[in-house]
Amino acid sequence: MNEQNLSPEELESWISKVSHEFYNLGYQDPWLKDVFKVIKQEIITSQQIDFMLGAMGGPKRYSGRSPGDAHPHIFINEEMWQQRESLLLLAFEKTGCPEFIRSKWLKIEHAFKRSMLMEGPHECRKRWATDELVIVPKPKLKIA
Image 1 (cartoon, rainbow, N blue to C red):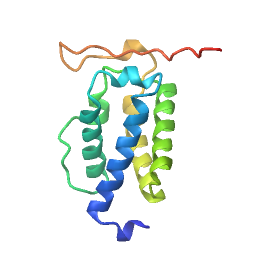
Image 2: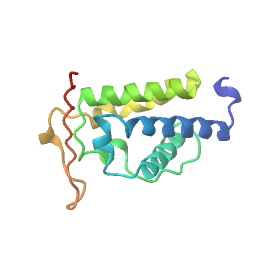
Image 3: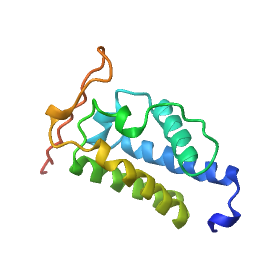
């Protein structure tokens, strides 16, 4: 399968499959589950589908903030970014997502990376007065 013969419906189907799988993994991940718990899984999955669909040339249904503006209250460092990306790569694998979609998706994600990463929790800022900062330390590994 290549980009030239993919219908808008097929693109949306792949984005939906990957997004659902990614958030299923994320809401079970020992670290990221505590980041994601501030939003219902169905809502964040829907937002991700709409955002990626528009970014990949499909219908523009996403009307939220850009990734950098949507996440200033969440402390995201390189290590957390890498953990998140490892789950995304696993979601690609588990769904059998075509390589050209994977490549485009990662290119879009990496375009926003610099606007989302922080050196430390002191860089977090609320989006509005009632916002809570989300600072989740990496869990320590339990040695059995």
